[in-house]
Length: 444
Ligand SMILES: Cc1ncc(COP(=O)(O)O)c(C=O)c1O
Picture 1 (cartoon, rainbow, N blue to C red):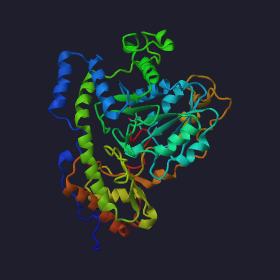
Picture 2: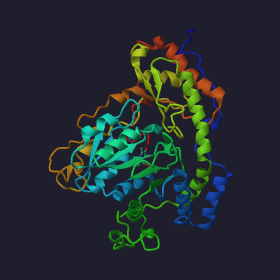
Picture 3: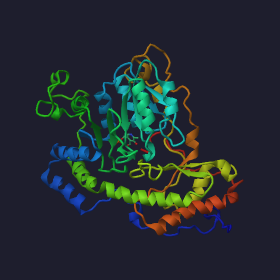
Picture 4: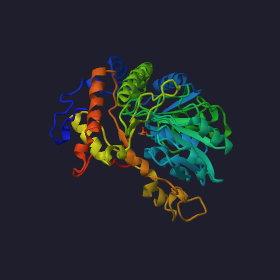
């Protein structure tokens, strides 16, 4: 092994010029997207629903559910999903502590209690920790396929069945991914996902709700699509029918038609673009496979489970393999090798159970925290036995969109160089790493 001076210490960086812009450019916008958007702009039909409905039909066919329903964002789609399954006052809903806030925060609107469980070594809902969180009040599981890695749906669905729980999937990081040959979003009773511009499936701002359950679909329509809450669009469920005309959630959550039009075009090419990303990301990680102390969070080839667009994909760092070198320092050194051309930082979303929103916020001025407003208790129990340690061990890698082998090798080489020369950094004063330790809203 040739010892090379690390770029962070004044050595020559591995990457010293800008990569081709297509390597990271996302979403891929072509003339077809532009034409579709322009057509809406020229027609002035921004607030219609016709393009949305075409998009929904195509999306449902693609993902494999009976119904799909668009929303103005993923947060509203998740809120509608909670309403669709009847989440209400005094119910408990279990979610992983490590996720973006929108996976679970809307439950407070319904008077429900979020209960947090731990993640496993892949930052996914830990099936071994779910039963600890179940009480007679538990109604639902919020299963987040975090950072594109599919949760262990065999075990999760078995637990849900045993305890008669509703399953909601949050597919915001994994649109189009598979678990053992079946699309994510088709396991639970309902699923919801963000389609915002940074996501794998990116249409500007938007959300999607999917389900095979017609009654739940109709509740989701009634929740936030007042213009469709009528006899023209819905069957005659008595408990919805009497409220025709107004949105049951008191929100206006329809998608603008520019995003819907772009979504239709994106859908046509999405799987083939994800296939290229999959090849690129696997190639990159294959090169790093031999480095002790670094592990990719990725699905096994040939398992039928996939990472779709590898959104915010993560690696796990074992500081012991690097003489105790802090992960932030390691990432800082890798970034220096890349001349900061790609995002490599330590950490991910902070664990939600540590936030006062759940332990203290009295949203309805009820005299007690909203998270327990309808429970006969005075203190919040939903964060018991939750662990934060895993956050210290994960790091992000560049999200490659193109299978440009030469560049993938160069980026992998940046990690390899630091891994092989880490001793140079031991004893270095740790500088403030401004890109690490992200706040609760990050990795959205
Ligand atoms: C896991 C997860 N759930 C839900 C959302 C909310 O989606 P949106 O931002 O489209 O409202 C996001 C991100 O934005 C997310 O990352």
